[in-house]
Figure 1 (cartoon, rainbow, N blue to C red):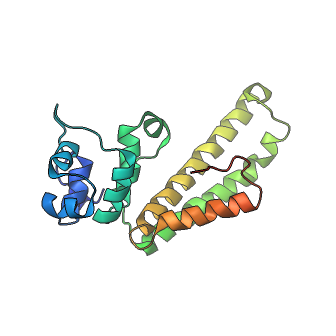
Figure 2: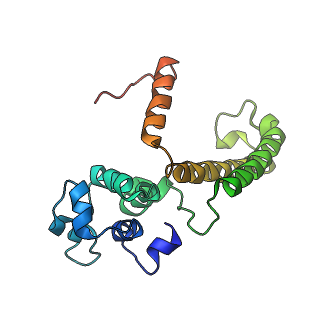
Figure 3: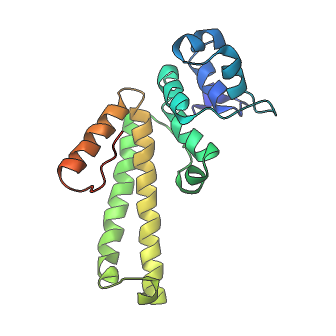
Length: 187
């Protein structure tokens, strides 16, 4: 969450709305919810409720807050809580800074993958690794997760400029077309 929009605000939905400079009344003109529903989404007390994912996705678009979906999943979903990265709101998110960080993480990842490539040959489970091999492998995994986190942060910030939903859907279609996905979602 951009620090300027969230100063001392724990409720991510209210922080995103205020960050967009919208009143509750202005927000409901763009969202398919009533003012009382919006107030309940923005209430962290006993009367508060968690908005459904479809509403959070729309809030993210209306508020120009691509980080909202990531933070929602991290805080409000058990799966996101376990697997989603923290949103890095205390970093310089301008494109030059983001690409410089990506370059560093990518180079570090390439170096460590080269070092560990031979370690994973013919390994099918944890038991196939010696302790030294396992430490090398886990060091590589940690570096690859740092790279993934950097890419995820860049993706979220690029979402301020473009429709990432369309880009992700086009990428997924490419994966279907290439036969990389065997169980295409039907919706």
